[in-house]
Length: 578
Image 1 (tube, rainbow, N blue to C red):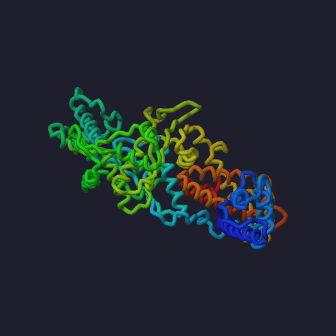
Image 2: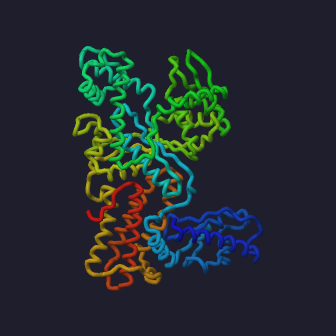
Image 3: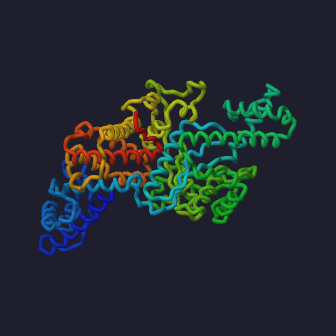
């Protein structure tokens, strides 16, 4: 809610408490505690602009029917210094308040003053938050899941920043472990088969065309000189050649997608600095590891069970989760991905982040409790590690599933999507469905330039406002600042509803930040566009009443500001014409 709204609610709460005390002094209500009550917007605005449940919440304390309590409170309520026009008691005891014209003019004045800062909240109090997202495997091209994770993660980071958090974006590069070994084996096989077509390709090797291309490009430079080298030397040379190129491509794709990371964290640095070894030693020191079959295991089942029992879960519930212990060090002495992941998350907190948020695919569901449990096991607050699980994306065209790129005839990659679909559409559409829901991404809708495309619909509202302003200036009319009395003329249903919606921007920001749900912001800005179009169709901006015209121009400018502020958060452009 806007500062105007917050200030009103704070003062109203104080006046309600004062009214309760006065009613008690007058003998209308019995003495007792002040009940916990809320002030909120009713679902149906015909019931008022804001409402309180104080009479119902305090019925037991007041020992009277909610309606009687509501009457007693209202009889002692002083609203003279509040921007409230009137109130009424409704239903089982709600007290509904109708805002004054001055309240709505105050919202306009606030937006005009704050401009691009409008909507900013201090909720986060500069708490340091890391959002780790995408973190795609560097051994191959990024896919459609990364497209959704990128849009969600980046927009969530923007929402948290707008909500007052100190936000840091990070990409975790798995440049060590099994996947790099497999990458090396695949590159080696493709390189050697260039000189011996019968050379066997590993059964679990990476089959992508990118592997073949890397091998050919390596051979163009080095010829067959590495055929006779030792396998370890050959594989290292191939990985050192191919991996940086993959990373350059990943960074290029992210830049094209308008995602800028503060850090690309390399897993190899954890191993090179002994941080993986250190965390394994720490778990061993705490008695949470054991040896079996030549490997070192982590007591995941024991740790998770203790946590859930302490949270009141039953043993039967825990048994159904079927926790298993995890290998930390393999028989060959190499650490597992899980060991490195524990070290990585420990490193995040050691770098001073208060909260760490990960955007993971839904297939990592079973990994959530393991990682939170591991943080608890090494002495960190597991509740400061939050995981947003993201469901799968299905691409559709003409109502049918699409799996292959029209350009390459191969599986669709992030880069293919961005070649076909405008970045504005991709970022906006991926943020129209909550992360925990499966998503059909309609390629036809994404390129459509009509109101069926949500991002086009919102951008068109911005462009329409710009068109109105250009036409006004062309007619030689100067746009000026309005007085409160002039802004009070904005009293039609469409004008009031639009202003009311604009006033809730920072409330939507805070709600999205609390729930880690940036889709609330896309829904909000779509609603703003809808209410603006309703206002535009019902209220003629250029009219004979000069004061009313200026007031409506002020409303247009404020709507333009809010739309631009939201789209900027989403890294979506705001065209002046369409």
